[in-house]
Length: 414
Ligand code: ADE
Image (tube, rainbow, N blue to C red; front, side, top):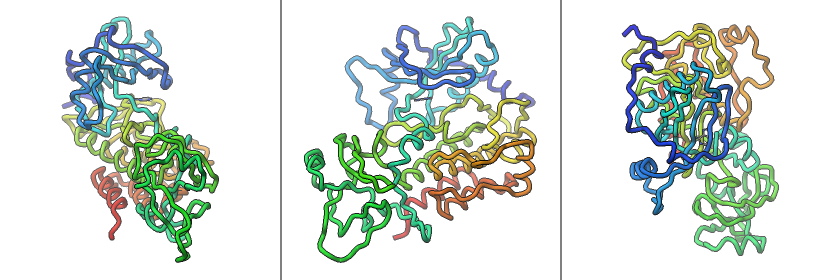
């Protein structure tokens, strides 16, 4: 086919089964806004809510008597700008074409009734904890590093072995009151307060510690120690939660889920073009979902890649060939995945810190400039990033290979 991807997306059908009446959409507060679009929280009632809940595979959603569903509604800011309504229409068509995957922000429905007036609403799954980038910024104080700062070994079991994190001390009486399920307490030799390793002195058990991962549903407040050794009160335990700790394992698990979602996109021949931590959303049950297909263009039916004219582009996430020729492919998504990994394992730092990105950025990348190992990553993780940043796109790993490599990190040999 000689069609450009945009034209192909245009040709995709719109199925009326997605249509949700405005009567059933109750708009709430704004969740986010960009240059052209905004996202608003909403409650959907009626048949659409019913349908989505019955399709839910996780089995954890409980259908309420009068069914309602919290969603995020994407819409254009201005009804005047036809090109953005067009872009949103393409996004809708791509989402409908894609089909559901756990690690994508899935389509729930849409309202096209006012499209003639330049209004289109896209209803997608609501992700309670917002973007991973904002989550990292909000929670970096309760991060538990499971990577040995000396030799770089990563042990995801670190928190329920001799090492103490994450732990909640029971020395405080208020904590003893709030933590009722004693089956989740483990006895350790000693607890450190510095945030990393324990000395096992072989003496008598000194304290009981609580392992939050073994009691993810408790919503009681409890006392803990953050990664800087400060005592803090966690108002909710379990991961994720607004004040619950997260670990190196959480980061690897999120990265693995993102790779799973991207592998699915790649299998459907969809190039995302804006993969970044800001576009990964965290939903209930620790599920990471890839969102914002605003810049995605469908390339199904053809392996040919599409050149795009100048636009606002996320240059720090772009591969050499994407900057040079505006060539966006699955492999340039893999490059962006490497940058996203770097963001995760630096707890949300801006890529290429301190660097002014000027016209020489491409030359620097071509000359071999790459980011350094992020603060909370080890050599295994950094090696994955460097593989994603190979200049030759064909030498970069596939998303399925990345997903396997990340999975292996979570399952260390016994
Ligand atoms: N912000 C942007 N998209 C969102 C979504 N689907 N859920 C929650 N917050 C969002």
